Length: 167
Image 1 (cartoon, rainbow, N blue to C red):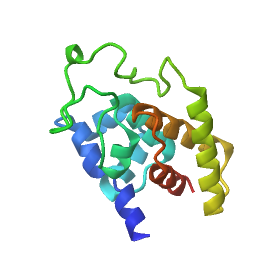
Image 2: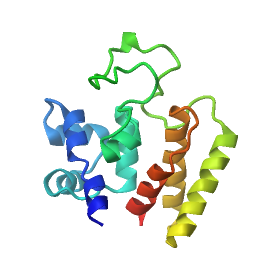
Image 3: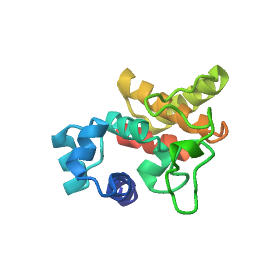
């Protein structure tokens, strides 16, 4: 359980995304309610899955990095991984970075989504948890997006973390 507590404290990643902006202004901009952000920012509470989706979607970051602080920070291939710097718009080649308001790219891969869904179902069964359909759908979406942007590699550790957060 202590390992999970370390994973769910996303304040260092949030601080990186906020930069010099006022924290509550940033939260408002990405669509996180003030009360929810207060719990995440001041108490280190585990964010709800929809809030993780919202942050990752609005900021264009990978969920793996947002949740664990490890791995590639930004989606796509043209980001400076050495210092985690977000490139200027002119540095992003067309088609390599997703629209920050969409998790699904234009070229949706139904075979990959099916594989991801099976992996999610298997992990949920192994953990013997019961999740509402909305949470399962969110996990499928996030896991697919992660796999797609990581070269179609399904990260089961990431799926395990999402299932733990959702249960």
